[in-house]
Length: 226
Image (cartoon, rainbow, N blue to C red; front, side):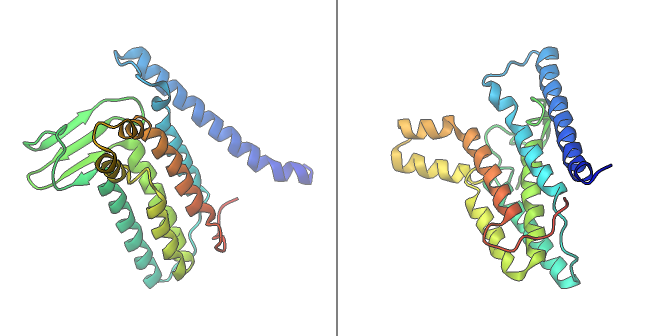
């Protein structure tokens, strides 16, 4: 085996792996709509969850956190957990007042939906609620892991995590949409346009946030698997 073959083989293997993953996901979506009565209202929305899942998992698998000391580990874990909770709260996955679509009387509810969107699990109690949407949980989890790895690299990298949270406009979309509605009027064309493309905006900004936290432009790159 020559040098060029040894260099390109891992890259080719990684590309082949992700191609198989994409094919499997495509078959899952086709199978879901073929064997259920569900029909996609907008076809691209059926595939956006896999953008979140694939991009997030790709970044996590290629990131190796620096070996931490005990203090740094707990600091990084604390920031990453707080980061995840903040994203989940702003996105409406957790909260103290259940949305109108959930059972206000409490209990579990499972919603079957297109792969990635579902199966979604919701739990409501008298004082709180929790919603598990697979692609959002995986996506936010991957962002939190990247923040964890970044904080371990250097103390000043904690700023990168905060910037990632601020830059994730899609994660904070409910707040932004509310501000737009308040400034432009609830029935305005601008508000309608923002809501119409909310998933597109969320997906694009999620990919941008992962990229910023993975490559961290302007900072020394932390170790990653090659």
